[in-house]
Image 1: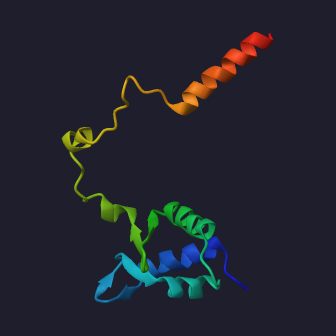
Image 2: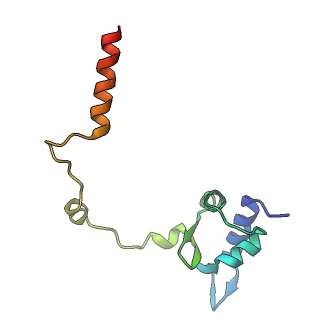
Image 3: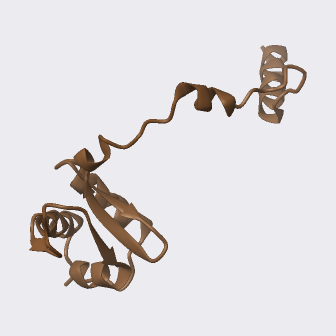
Length: 119
C-alpha cells in the first residue's frame, strides 16, 4: 500500500537531517523514481506533489521540482539569496494600454446592461 502524503513528507524531512555526502542538515537532490519508490506510488501527480510540499512547508522545508530531479531544502537556506532590486522589477512591470479594453470587461459591461433592461 502506498504511503500517505504526510508520511512521505516526514521521510523527506528526516532525510534532510541525515548525514551524507559530507554534510548534515543540508538540501539534497532526489530522483523522480526514488521519490516514487519512497512514496510507494507508480506516478507522482500534481496533487500528491503539492500535498508533500504543503506538509513540508508546515515544518519549514520545501520541495522544488525540476525536470530531472527534485530538491528538498529548508526555507532558511533561501534567506541569504540575493533579492531582486525594485528598479529591475519596475523595469518589467506590465502596463495596460489605456485605449485597449479587455474582452472580458467588455462582456461584463454588456451583461450588466442587459440585466438593467430586464428590471
